[in-house]
Image 1 (cartoon, helix red, strand yellow):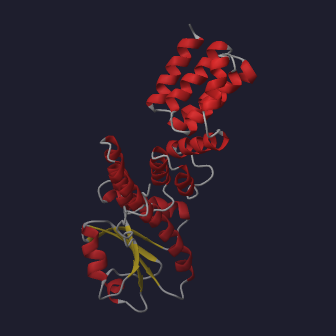
Image 2: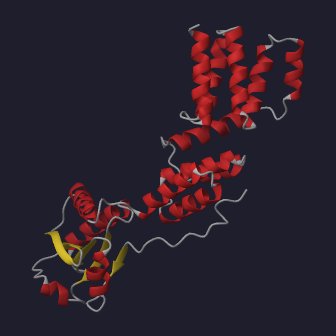
Image 3: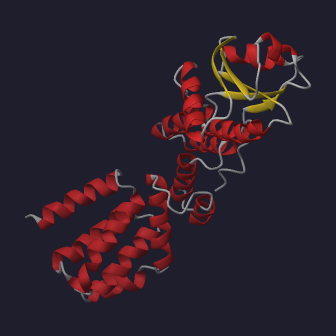
Length: 300
């Protein structure tokens, strides 16, 4: 199943650009009528400018479309710096709806730069980013059973923000649902090792189950037909079923082990059951129904 390669999303928004006096009206004044624009007046000889510039770019990039950054070299483009009465640099102005609404002069600590960018982003109507809108579209598509629409939205979000863990987890989950764990694993390589997104954790659990699972179930089913108390065979069968995406059946087999011998093999069945819940997703029907069955068994 191809999900990423078949979708061609729009290019990432031009969040950071250099402007001239000739382009200032279009790049700043007009652009700020739809998205807040932060203007950084700087010069190549200015030491504090070299400190502030990267911090602004990082904060604007992290805002993911809620605000844009325009950089103006005042030595080459003095007109608007003069109109705004810039007397020292770096000088930063925020434009919303075609007019300056906030600003500061001099380099600030990174935390204050982030706070400034976040505050300006919210002036544009709450700071909803194109990536967030695409993630909402993906969730709506999933609710309607439109896997292709969800895949397209996630792919576009990843083009805009390759490090977005929600988009990574969502796309990987789609591959898992399609039975393509190899492609799911490729997508997960984009995520940080310590990512806590539920979809990422679910897919990682599914991949781990598949890695330890036998490829066939017939031999284990035959062993169980001969001896229903062959817990090792039932555990292997459950693992194979889970790896094949038959998670509900895997849950039933594991609960049957617990019903017959709760403490068998250091509670191996219960531990594997938790792995299956993780692979299914903790809020999935499989996990919810499995927890109810387990509770009914343990507290009956």
